Length: 196
Image 1 (tube, helix red, strand yellow):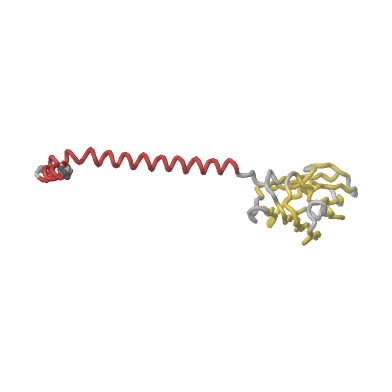
Image 2 (spheres, rainbow, N blue to C red):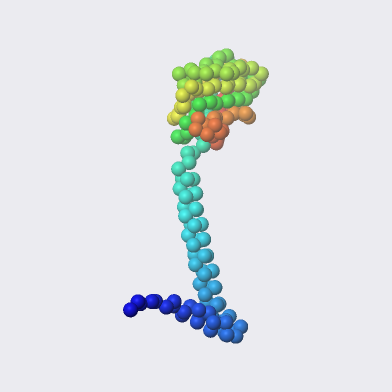
């Protein structure tokens, strides 16, 4: 005797019975089901948003702090007619850099630039090194990425008249990332020098 399994008609019977129900009864049955589906979708979306935010926050915390250019020393007293040297320092703050464009402004009525020396042990490519009329322009590059606190150049000033002389960085000062080719400069800190 051959055993044959008859199809299970439970689902079909339930569907038929559901069809005979009134609209109110159908509404009462379907409402909690729809509510549960919406709740499940909302929870899943929330999980995805949380994961996305955590990934974003993690990426933000691993980003390096922007680089800083500054003058060292950033203040000094000197007599009229005497000379002093300052360093242009670049603190990469963990960034790998391979180029820098630096513009400095100084009061030519108080200060005279006598020499600008690029540190070619750090930046072996010199594109521009000019000064005069209250402005210094330096554009340098490196064939290998650099990081750390770097002395870009040394400037020798001569005090020619009494007064307070502010030396400041100006546009288009920028520092190029070796990894992204973007400007990673975040702060520019000049100095104040008193000639007496």
